[in-house]
Image (cartoon, rainbow, N blue to C red; front, side):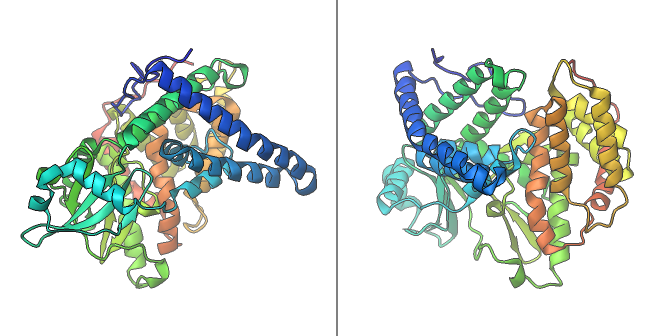
Length: 453
């Protein structure tokens, strides 16, 4: 029997949202539909993959099935889509081919209809809409599964960006997230999932997805990021307009001509500087501020003149000081070729270690991985490849990293492709050293504490 609130009392570290209580009837009805539609769509896909495997190989068969799984997530609605987007970054737990397909969920989605936009504006501002704005564009400047961004004009002529939540989305997403977490908690008790921290992971992801519905929380996140980068001329976090914000509408300063441009359209002389500033911004969040934007896919990072523009801070995490120290220790060990230190940090940060895990063997393999990546030319060192190997080792040795440790780390991995396009020769390790040394000094009093297995 499904609980009324699968996330009650289960708040992931770094996040504080819980799913609103759902009725048993609503959970059962939605659950029955999800199971039936999934069986009808995915069983034929599995049969097709089984036929394809002897003809074209295991990888082709897996990609065939995963592609159809992702299409089905899109059919199920925004909550499964957002869940899939975030889960697609967990290469330590999911097959790389599946992560590749889940990465496609970041593509632009269909914007709201004119009727939906009018309803969202009416729900946000009621009869005061005309007093606040003389114009709201009907065409979305950006569109996602949860909200769309529209340009508006205030009576004094100032332009505003309105992030409008899709009408009616909150209840449906809460219902689906409750189902996802309940299913994961059940799967953790079954033999295939036994020992894997599925409930911890899905609880964290569900809270992260729910947080993207909390526009009040996102306004607070944007304000904190803006304060953290107040002294920087390199990073632009849009200012929020609290007097115009509503529970379903986030009002911000409008940044004109903010469009995604191919790297080829950016002046070649500016590209290395923009790459360094992007990496520097992520390092500052990870190592110095301890407050990290964890959703830095290309749709949330833009370049305007000499500055890096960062948007959509709904999925942001405040790091525990000990976790921040672990990040600094890990990257400093990587930069200095101290592989054993890196392995020990990963063990210390694990949320669960299998009873039969060969911890010393794991540390030795991490040390070897670091050795192979120390002193190599900057162009040859790839964070994503390094991270994938590290995650594979964790999976093989039965060490499961805490979500609070992994997701901020993935913010750096997600941005690597964009940075490499700007500057293929950027040295990620050298760029980190100054901040790492400063972070290590600031957190020297925090001695690592090894978790029990």
